[in-house]
Every structure is written in C-alpha cells, then in structure tokens.
Image 1 (cartoon, rainbow, N blue to C red):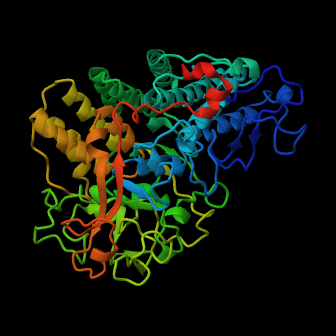
Image 2: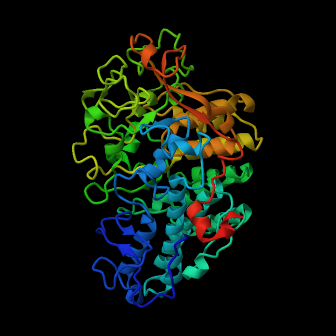
Length: 556
C-alpha cells in the first residue's frame, strides 16, 4: 500500500527518523512505520518540531528517504547505488551476473509483470520519501528559527518531493498525487492523477524550488549533498526533455550554464571516487560515508580476484560504443584493435570505466578468457564469474583496502554538469535551432575534449547526422549512471536496441569458445542473453500488484 504518515495516530506515534549519527546530510536512516513507544533511536512527534537541531534531523531524513545501507540488490530508492547502477541491467549497457531471471533483466526482456519486485521497490521508495517530505512541509513552520532557514529547508524538501513525482511521471505515467499526510483509510483509497497532472505539479514545484534555493556556488563548506538551484533546474530540464518540450528544456539548461558555477572537470575518472567526488562537475550526488553509511557497491561489483561478487557485467554493445582515441568508430578489423589488450588505442573512458581480460584491477590481473580454468561455465559463480568478459572499474578507488560492504564512502553522482551540456545540445537540436560550431564546442566538445579524454572535436552541424553522434556520446559519457533506460524510453528506441541477442567480449583465439558458448557469433563474442522488449508495454511500468490488491482503483 502507499505508506504515509498518519496524522491521526496516537501520541506514541514517532517521526520514524532513525539516527545513525549526524555527520552530514545523508547519514540518517528514515522509515515511515509505526515504532514502539519511546524508542531510544527516534523522537516523539508531539515535541519534535521544537528546535533548529531537530529540524536539521528531519531535513536529513528527507534527503535520506528510503535509502538502505546494505548489500541489497533490489532498489529501495532511486538514489541507492543499486537504484542507479543496477538500473543498467535493464538496458543494452550491462547484464546482471545472477542471470536472465534477475528482476532487473525482466524489466525489458518481454517478461515484465506487475509483481516485479524492482518496480515495487522504486514505487515504494518514492512514496516513502514523499511521505517524509509531506510531513516535513506541514510542520517546519512550527519551529522557532530564522525564516530564511525555514524557507531554504522548504525549498529543499519541495525539490526532493518533486524529483519523486518526476520519476513516477516518467516511468508509470499516471500515479497518485499525494501532497498531505493521510489516514490509512484515505491512503488506501487514493485515485491516480493523470500524467499531465503529475508533470504540471513537478514543473511548478521545481520552478519554485529553483527560485528559493541557493546557487551551487553559494553552498558552504559542509553542505555537500544539499540541493542547489542548479539541481532543481537540471531536473526541470529532464522533465522537459521527457515531455519533448525542447525549447523549455533549452532555457532551463542554459540558466545553469550561464550561472558559471559548474565545470567539466579535467580528470574524468576521479569524479567517481572520494578524492574528487565534490568536484564542481558533480551537481547532486547520493552521499555515502565509509563505516557509517557505507557504499556496498564494491562488494557487489568488484571482480572475484579482488573478493567481489562481480554482479555488474558491462555488455559488449556498450564496450563497442567506445571508439578509438582519434574519435573514429570501433572496428574489430582495424589493426589498432588489439584482442590481447582491448583498452589499447581506445577512447580513454573505456579504460576508466571497464576492466577486460588481461587488465589490472587493484593491482591484480583480471583473467576471464574462456580457456582459463573455471571461467568457461557461465552458469557458476566461481573464479571470475564473468558473464560478459568485462567488469566495472567506474566508481571505484582501487587503492581502497577496507571492508567491501561497509567501509567504502564513494558517492554516486545523480546529476553531472556533463549531462547538462549534452542535454542542452539535445534540446537545441530537437527544438530545430541552428547548430553552430560554437554551440558544439561549448557542449559536446567540452565533454569529450576534457584533458583526460582528449577526443577530437565534432564538427557535424546537420541535425540528422549529429543526433546519433550525440546519443552515443551521452551513452558512453554517462555509462552505468542510471540514465540509459530513461533515454531509451523517451527516444522510443526500445524496439531497436533491446531486441535480439546480446554479446560480451570477443575471444577469437579461444579453443573452448566454440563448444561452450550457447550461440556462436561471427566476431567470436561471448553470448550473454536475448531480449524481447515490447514497445508500448515495457516502456510504461505496471503499478505494483500489491498496491492494486489494496486499492483496486489504481488498476483502472
């Protein structure tokens, strides 16, 4: 059921803010369930809204939402590492080592049903955060503190609530629009709002939040992770792109550019590790703190040779999207392509994002050749347990030596300035505006030309010829950052890119490949899976079956 705070419950009701330790925003666990009377790790509702310190705790709870710090594989929120990175399993970017029956894989392989627990996880996570935000907005004015601080907090929570309705509008279309706390009976009898109503609400809320929030450059030391004007405008731009309102998207993104607070960082790979996670390129990120609210993605995605579970396996279709370092497309027939070192002569982002057979990771050699002992059986989790021949390097500081489940503190970017620039160019292109070399240099060429990447400038100004170049640039720049499925949906290309057989890395000299691969590829790429995306079905998620069982009106 949709879970919301019950404003009519007994005086023993608590706010459901479970304190881990206030180090920074993002370190508090929150939940919306009724807890026992006077628990030691929560606050009684009747006397909570009495101080600025308590208001900050409540604000932290709104940022925290339904995020769970654990080795979960089903998302409890859009902004967990599995909510972001594991979303890629439903795309042509990555494959879940757990196999075809993985519920992320079922999102797009033609077997999506209303009982899918991934769909349910995102749905429940949205409404949990919405409930926390509604409670906050109804009570924050009770606190005796400076009005300017109250106004900023309200804008932050407006932003957080609007982002959840953004996701609901984009993945479900219609869904309940709840803006106040309800009784259980009210909650279980809500009606769906139309997509138009959701989009209008999100648009208005993000505009209001952007007007009230401080600019990114005005955030003070210790405020990393808090929403800024740019974060609100970036989500507004996303909304307009999703709704094909391209002139308005262009205006939203141009505002961010004109503020001048954000940069394209010269060092691409460092954006995803603790040493540079607060770069001005990272506009808004999921916050993790090693040892207190750790990021367990290393446990899930490190290769077995580094004690990980190797769940995240980049697909060959993504790997092959990275061309050569002179900007030309990849070809296995090109003499620059080296089967023994697939990172040689490639777009540097290939080397920053992936590991491949013979590459080193954390000082160890990654061996996934089918001829290697223990690597030929794709259905076992032994040895490297690879399913594609590629592994994940992005997001990891390879010098990290702590507990893989709890000690890593690397953030996961939600919005980067690179996305803003690529989205601005897309909005201009799709709005039918003239594409000039200056525009290309200020957007896509700034992204691909950063010092650590250094690809040649794109000079194509014809819209039809530029479109595939831009879409590919977006795919490889934002790879494994949770954007690909939404891009596929809004571009309407699911029936092109999510249908048919999917392959991994090529092993042309393997003696075992022809006898162990389920299907034989002329390029000797390892067979991974087959998808059967249903256009018009799988691009609109079903409301979870458990919700409809409680409230049949949601099934209409």
